[in-house]
View 1 (cartoon, helix red, strand yellow):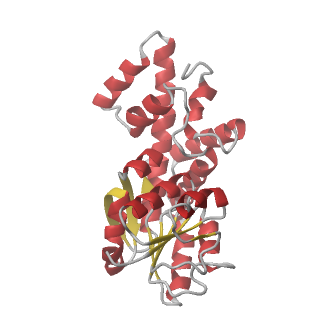
View 2 (spheres, rainbow, N blue to C red):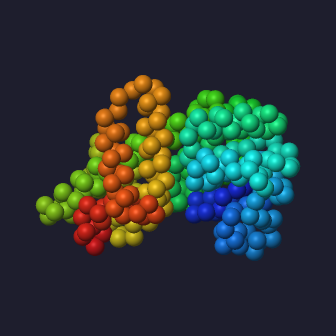
View 3 (tube, helix red, strand yellow):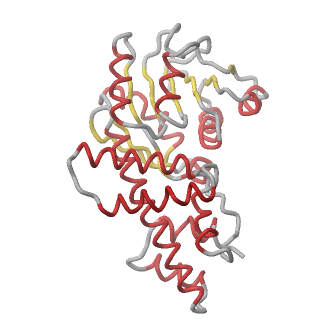
Length: 290
């Protein structure tokens, strides 16, 4: 592994991912608008700054809230690709595929390859290095960055041309939205009928009701009363919205997706965009996690 990395976005997920790269010996610099997010890396003697323009890195990895933030961080004022030649940009955020394809074209014009590589697995996966990466882009560029990805992820899938990763991630979060909402409702119904919630989750996880919600989100983040899976309602609703846009582009009717947009949007409006997605249990049943 000879490539150096500029990692942009050291928030709750990104900070854990960047730390794994640093711990594995990858030469890394870190950029983030928050000085607090940079402090752990600065304390290790790593190059840090609030913008990436002057930081080293052959490979730029972004982990940011939206595609607008990604574009600004790369080609906006102080952008990482505005001064120093970069070989490859890997966007690990959850973003709109059309925006990613457009940005990839702009970067190609200055000689920089772009891959989209969003991940699934939450903060626990980022901490343990077991994230699932969904990658779109050139195969040769993918082969070059794969060793880096494997230091942060348990599985890495190449899915097709640039934008493919973001398509699959948006649809993944559509599925996640469905299973978390329905599993939460099922858990509340059974609990109110006097059944043990832990026992129900074990049965569902062993049977056809198995999902990430029954395996992880509900037992670890709802029954514990912590409601801290690590994904905000704002960002979750953004991802479901991307899935809905994909359905429109595919000229496909999706009544289930439409219903989920309404449910999750109402939850965001009631709980606040910064609330964790598992907090819907507390909204549906004030005694959840008690």
